[in-house]
Image (cartoon, rainbow, N blue to C red; front, side, top):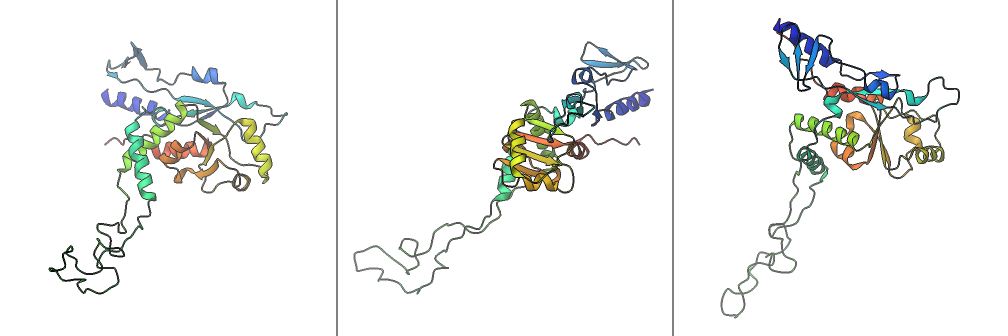
Length: 283
């Protein structure tokens, strides 16, 4: 009986993945996802009617209205406002952890440092090794050769040398940072989802006018495909404060840097595959 109940919980948790729906936002938010065999008890625990065991409640999925990069047509049979996308709460409703975001951002910035600064020590400076003046009898301070760090043109004491500034961070911490960053953008209403990032033309003027109409200033477009759509890449290349990227190359720093992040549906699917809960195989 216990194994059957665990199997029921696993099947219910798998239902929280991405699913594109055509229902309205109001009706989608009220759609139940819980298993009919589970009954809520006081909102804090779930009880199986058959076995009488209690378990933590299953998180309900999030629903976000779809936007459109391409202007809608007048003869469109289905308005865009009626389309919503289902988001996994494990990825897009993660508790905000500022310490994890700080670790991921510092880790990324450390990896960008060239570490090529270099100075010459007294052993690298060209010149003779002869003592400048006698040790005693002149009434002046003691001096050695001309490469001394105390002299002009001499070597540098404790100067920088080429080094690697990159730091290590566990993979699971970086994955948590991605979940926290996406959740923070969604909480701040800075996350948008479109069905596709394909732009029909190549004119920068038309694309800039569409962005101004949508109010998408300082926007990062992320696609889940292997390559960025050619129309989007060519039309946005000369626009300031607009950038494009693929989901595989996206970092926590990029999400925190851009006030608005727009994902397409393949990007949502990619994040749910890489950052979602991995199914536990029963032995």
